[in-house]
Amino acid sequence: MGFWKTWFSTSESTAASRTGAFEEMSADVMGNSSPSSDRIVFSTEREIDLYELEELCDAVGWSRRPLRKVKKAIEHSFLVATMWQVRGNQRRLIGFARATSDHAFNATIWDVVVHPDFQGKGLGKALMKYVLKKLRSEEISNVTLFADPHVVDFYRTMGFMADPEGIKGMFWYPH
Ligand SMILES: CC(C)(COP(=O)(O)OP(=O)(O)OC[C@H]1O[C@@H](n2cnc3c(N)ncnc32)[C@H](O)[C@@H]1OP(=O)(O)O)[C@@H](O)C(=O)NCCC(=O)NCCS
Image (tube, rainbow, N blue to C red; front, top):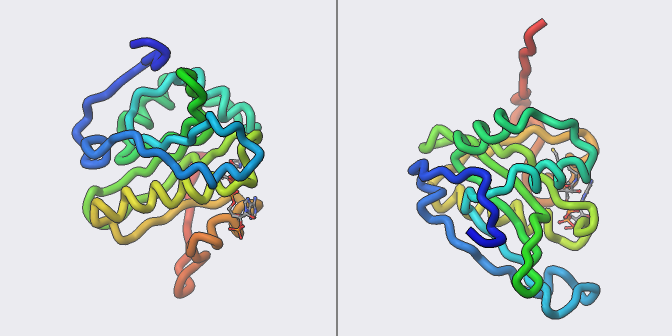
């Protein structure tokens, strides 16, 4: 499969994967600091090298999770969105997000990450817009997520509200 080294691939028939195609971002997202040959590409294809994803998560300091569980989580997600830097015939995974859903009303976004080399250029926002566009195209109208305290304002810039009408997210963990 060439440089699309496929560690797993699923044909799971979620609507989001059926519509999966590579979509190119307008070059101005990257500003002037990026070589003109670079392109930013978004995809809902699920062909992801899990080790490359692990490297991306390592780069932002997330704790490692067992790859077999990451693979399962991805397989069972409604939507998997990836963001790639494409330079010539090379591509590099620079962003990731996924959403679980009841396929009708609700979706929850998880694991939003942009590689530190690419942060602060509007790409996180672009990735979230891409995810929201895909969810809206599936007529999902209630989108939730769990924001780490230091990124609450990042999500606010996209219209996410904390505790709308006093509704609280509640958690249960095994003791
Ligand atoms: C959070 C993250 C995805 C943001 O990606 P990014 O590409 O740096 O964000 P953008 O450049 O698109 O920023 C979009 C807007 O959010 C703001 N923003 C970005 N990161 C922010 C932060 N940590 N806190 C507050 N605001 C933030 C930007 O200033 C920008 O505001 P503007 O639209 O008014 O200019 C990225 O920093 C990241 O991957 N962090 C580590 C992983 C993480 O914490 N993920 C979230 C888990 S809940």
